[in-house]
Image (cartoon, rainbow, N blue to C red; front, side, top):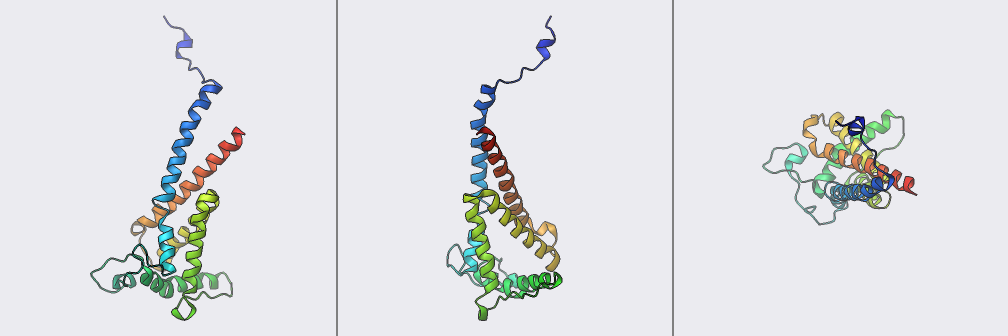
Length: 193
């Protein structure tokens, strides 16, 4: 017959707890690396297209479907499409937000002003992505804020249904995960020291 101690779980010793820590940290570091490269690198491509850099399909032609017209193509968010969206959708939406907040500023996004608003958004995307590597929580916060704005734009201005925003919600989830996992890793490093 076994006593109560058989059913009592023994707590791991400090050295046993610490021995599993490197594996746990390696898994989190790997997950963070995958999140930064696979979904979140799309921000670099989006920024490249906003700056008319002819890479990764940014130099493609405007798909009429991208601006609400009929066509047999699929929008790819290339330079022509992003600049059209900026001029005819992002800018009116952002200016409406500024006006409703009582801020006397008007965004501009036309060929005449060098697509200023698209360049601002592209710079924020690059800044956020670079910070993912230098200061992960800050970079993830910037990308989370940017994607939250994009989702607001799609839901309120374009009246898109949430199920049509799979990519946007995936990017939001990825940046939130980086923010939370980076905070956890930072807290463990501080606790260990």
